[in-house]
Image (cartoon, rainbow, N blue to C red):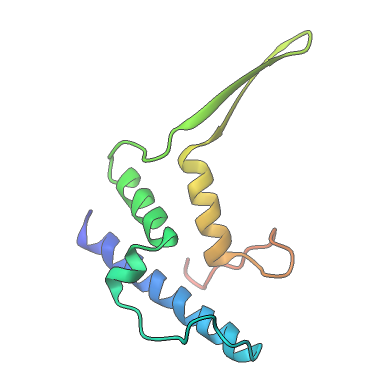
Length: 113
């Protein structure tokens, strides 16, 4: 992975962790385990960190970490659907990073994105 991609992934993970802490504080919810400063390695090992790495590696030309499924149906005609794969991973990450907590369908991109 390129250093630039790693830098972007680390910044995204740290921002998401800070947002999680902010949500807990604003809702006055006690976390299950007290918040402590997480290392970059711990954040990279999270599911979000893994998905961000898969996306970065895919963009760099490495084989997809998650393969799509091909489904065929016949109801008088033949339809082929391709679901999952990297497209699903990108959508899940974008919905977490940019998605609205209210409806899950609205995304808010930062200025200059």
